[in-house]
Image (cartoon, rainbow, N blue to C red; front, side):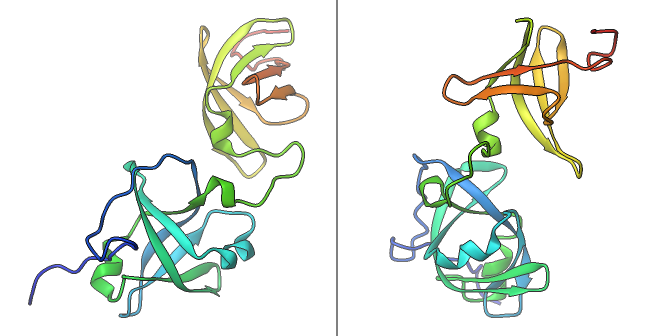
Length: 196
C-alpha cells in the first residue's frame, strides 16, 4: 500500500515548508473534494468575480481551523465546471494528495485583489469597528458579519450584549474604515425593547 501522499507546496523543494502569513489573505474559494485521480480539486467559489481568478499564478491554502498556517501553491490549471471551479495545483498529483486539502480555504494576497468600488469593503475590514448610535451611545464592536439572502448582518458585542444590525441604508448612516467607526440609526425593536 505504501505511505501517505502529500501535496508539495512550492518553493521548498517539496518539503512542505509552512509560510507564516504577514500579509492579509482573501478567501476566494473552498476545496470541496478531489476531482478525478490526477490531483484536481473541486472548488466552491467564494468570490463575486470568479472570472478574475484566471489571472493568478499562485493560490495560498489554509485550513479554516488554523488560518495562520498558509501554504503557497502554483496554479497549473483552472477551469469552470457548472457551479464550481476545477483547480490543479503544482505538487498535488494524485487523488490522495488532493484529499488532504479537503475543506481548505483557497486564498489570494489582499494586494492582488481587484480594487473595490466606492462604498464597498471586505468583511474582515469591519471586524473591530466601533459602533455607536446617531445620539452617541456606544453599542460595541463588530465581531462578525453574517451573510443572508437579503443583506449582510453585523454582529455587535458591547454593553447591551449582542446586537444584530442589518447592513441597510436606513440603519448604517456612516462608516469610516480609517477611524474604524460606524454610526447607526436603531429602528424600533432592534434592541428587543422600545428604542425609539
